[in-house]
Image (cartoon, rainbow, N blue to C red; front, top):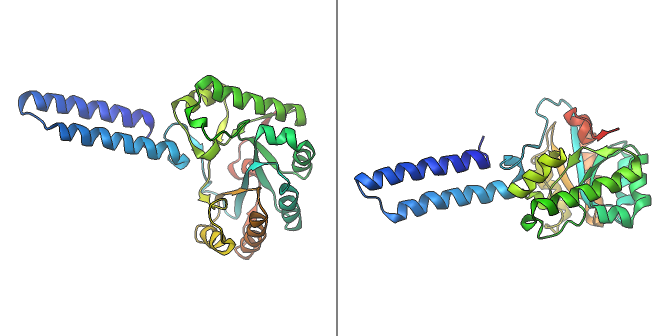
Length: 257
């Protein structure tokens, strides 16, 4: 598996060989540029594609599952979350909500309803800042701890799951997560429901990738996603798949008492 450590070690080894070859044979600076460029490309991909587990190990699916999937929602709770909860209740389905700390403070009653109806919650940072990839380790950890405390104050349990905003990871985030001890939850199906305008295209995108053990990323932030969820739940039923919480799918605890 390609990780930040193996990629960097490979770069150093390649540079050492190039320096030795340069001493005896002469090597074009263009070769050095190509090697370093490949390192940067792999680092950029690894930092933005959580499924690579480049900086931190991430759970993205359960290949041993037989008839279960996990539908997950990021960025709530919002005014659209009750509609999501109603659709899940009507289908007798469970889900996992990765909540932003400031959104929990804004909608504590909706957060409590998520818990009351048997769903799981995870930490999705406090601010979901667009510049979180540039935060220091301390600032990332502060965001994680702040949301942990909000969740703890609401449900009297410490959250074990964390999903990085935008799926972005880097060495600072990795160090913060090592300190916090959270398990990182990614996804195997990214719906792009915040990018694609057509509900039909979003549903088709999910349908083509849907299989047992999948973790699906949605956002409880629009009526469009509510409609997508309703169609997804019908699709899952046709395929004899049942939506469960991430902890049930992965067989790992969501909270510490």
